[in-house]
Image (cartoon, rainbow, N blue to C red; front, side, top):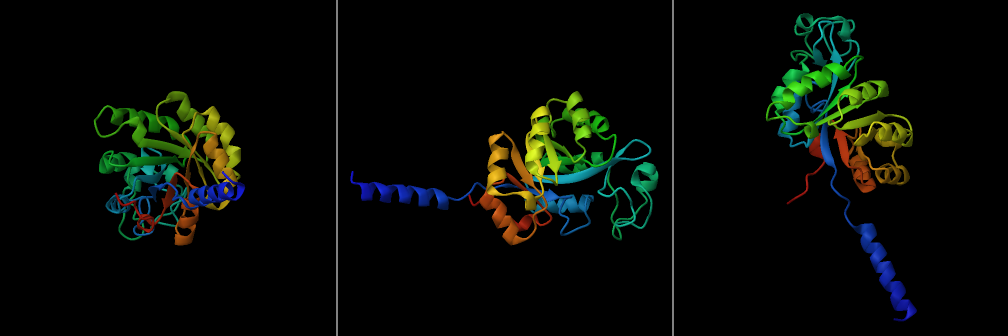
Length: 254
């Protein structure tokens, strides 16, 4: 084969690979469908299911009476008609609080009962002392048919809480949440045998995406809402996109 023809074949192969479509990332509804309904509420989660998500991300705290409740902020001031710290109230008081005019704060049990294992549930351990209670609750749900360990993903910015969870549960996948250099999360990910690293999308580029995936981790990036940013993340080859607007990520046509 002559040199020009060989070079032409190499260029063709390169262009075909460069233009090959990236894999479709899974779609994870952020706090349900936060862009449509009050975040972390049952109607928001139901909306995410209606939009055909592959997974749903929620946040949990342990309240004063010991139950796990689904809420994002430490304080109630921003989203509700109440004030103070959610961890300092008992469940009876929390259930009387209104979120954004008419919604209520659910328990983790209510969320599990609503989803019934239809999609993966990413539980972010937002509050302190949530790891052991979460594991205890999940063990009860794993005794039924709807839920199994592979349908749960436990994540947290509090890596110590992730360590506690992993010490009592080796079966449920863990994701390392980070808003810093995502490469710094690789070591703790390896230590905890994590399945994924969940970075802020603005921290990602082709180099660190390749390094994270080469280390054996999925990348579920947050919180990607703009169409251009969604396209960029797809082109980088992330494994999942956490978004307030699941409908903005087109599903593959079978």
